[in-house]
Amino acid sequence: QVALRELHQVYDYIGVDTASVLESADADVACECADGVLIAARAAISRRGTLRRAVEQLHPAPICGVVLLDA
Image (cartoon, rainbow, N blue to C red; front, side, top):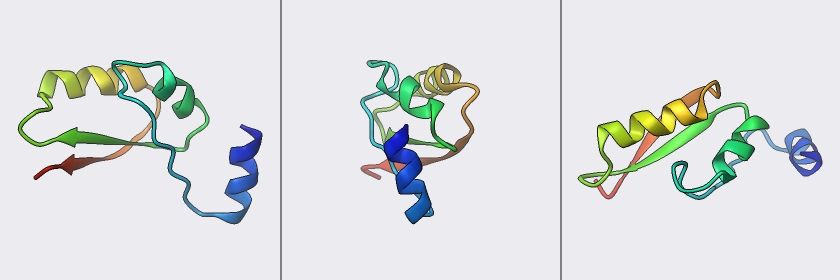
């Protein structure tokens, strides 16, 4: 968290890429110190139920949006 605070003094936006939400606790830990979450979904592969579970797992972190990959 110290490093993120220092970076936040210099940059307006900081992106932290983590492993898949449903496969690792990394995203849960990262969103605790984030202002918001951007979810990546893969076209024709990611399913609505899986995305819903990911959003529920990250709650109460604010979801800023979804990036659709391989569209």
